[in-house]
Image (cartoon, rainbow, N blue to C red; front, side, top):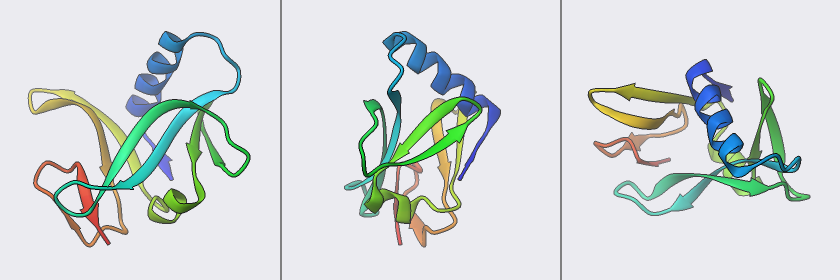
Length: 106
């Protein structure tokens, strides 16, 4: 899993807004839905015993066992420009994606 410097900065800001709880991380999950069948979810959450934890420059990314399969080799980026603002995902496992990039299929 790769996380760009822009994404790390945006994740740090989101975590800082939640307060200084030591066990908080950013959960990156894959759930059913969207135009292509699967979509990404990002949320601030507590670590769970079954999580895979990926450290990215001091930010803990929390992956549940099911999601980790779909997220192998993914690049998480953060865009801030005229075409929109927010996180973007480049997933080498995706066989198709929707036009907005919010969902994918394998």
